[in-house]
Length: 462
Image: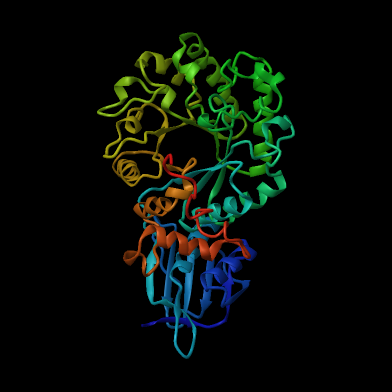
C-alpha cells in the first residue's frame, strides 16, 4: 500500500503553539508506545512529518486539511484548535506494519474536514465516583472525537473558596482540575464551566438523596427551597454567593465564550405559581449579569417550554400546564445572548419540535440528546436541516454503559475515522482509543470504560 512509513523515531516540524508534551504523549500512544515523536519549530498552523511534496489545500469552509504521500504527511489548520483536530485525524490514520521490519504507516490520502454541525459540544459530569484518571481520559476521548466544546459540571467535586461545603471532602483541588481543563483546550475544545443556578442545587442525583451542602452543614438550609433541591432565589445572600462561584470558575477555566447556568428540573418552581412568578426577575438579573461578565449564558429549556411545543412527544415534568404566555414572561426578560438548550430524551425522529419551537424568536437554540442512538440521530438531523446553533451531547451518569455512543454522535457530525472504522463497532473502537490515550501506568479498574466487568451481587432473591 502506498503511504508514509516510519519506525521507532520520527521528528515533526510543527506550530509550537500546540501543547507539545500532550501531543508527543498521544502520538506515542497511537503508535502503541513503540515510536517516539520530537518536535521542532515549523510554520504557523502546520504539522509536518517527513517531506511531503506539498501542503494540502484547504477550502474556506473547512477547519483543517491533511495530505499523506510516500515522502511525508502534512496537516494545516485554520487556527491552533483546528490544527489540533487535524492532527487527531492524522493520529487515527496510523496503522502498524508487521513482519520482519516492524513500523507504522499512514496511507496516501488528501482530505479536508467535513463536519456537518459546527458547534459539536459535550456535557461531562464529574461525580464523587469519578476518579481523576477517569475524568482525564474521558476529556481526552472527547478531544480525539473532535468535539469543539466540553461543558464540565462538577457534582460537589471541585473545592471552592467562597463556601467549602459546596464540595465533598474527596473533591478535586483547583490545581488538579486545571490540569485536565488545560488538556481540553490543548485538544482543540473550549472548556465551558457549569454550575447549577436553580434546580440540582444538591449537586447530587435525586435518587441518591444526598446533598453536598446540607449533609455537611444543615444550618445553611435557608439557601435552598424547603425540599433542598433548588436554590432559594428569595434569599438575598444567594446572588453574591453564586456570583463568587462564577468568578472562581472563570479564573479556573480561563478565557471562554459561555457559562452554563443549568436551570433545569426545579420542581417547586415549575409546580408552584408563586415560585414560578419569581423566575422572570431572577433570570433577567442573572443572565444580564453573566453577559456583563463577558460570557453568553447557557440554560436548559425544559422549564420554559409550553405544552404546544411538544408535537407528538412526551412532556417534561416541568412543562406540564405551561402556556406560551407563562414561558414568554420568563424568556422575554432573558439577556438576548442566552443560548437555549433543548434536551428531550424520548424523541427518536426528526425534526425535534421542542428544539425548533423557539427558532426565529431571537435566541440561539441547541439540541441535546443523551447517549441513545435514535435520540442522537434525531437531534443531529434536526441541526442539519434547521438553523440550530449546534448540538450538545449529554452523558450524565451513564458513561460507563453508553459512553461509546460519543463516537456515534461524533461520526454523524462528520468526525474523522480510522481506516478500519467501517469494519468494527463503536465499543471496540472507543476501547482502542482509550487504550492509546489513558496516561500510563493504570490499574485494572482504570482500564477501559467500565471499572468492573460484572456485578457479582445476586440478581434475584434466593
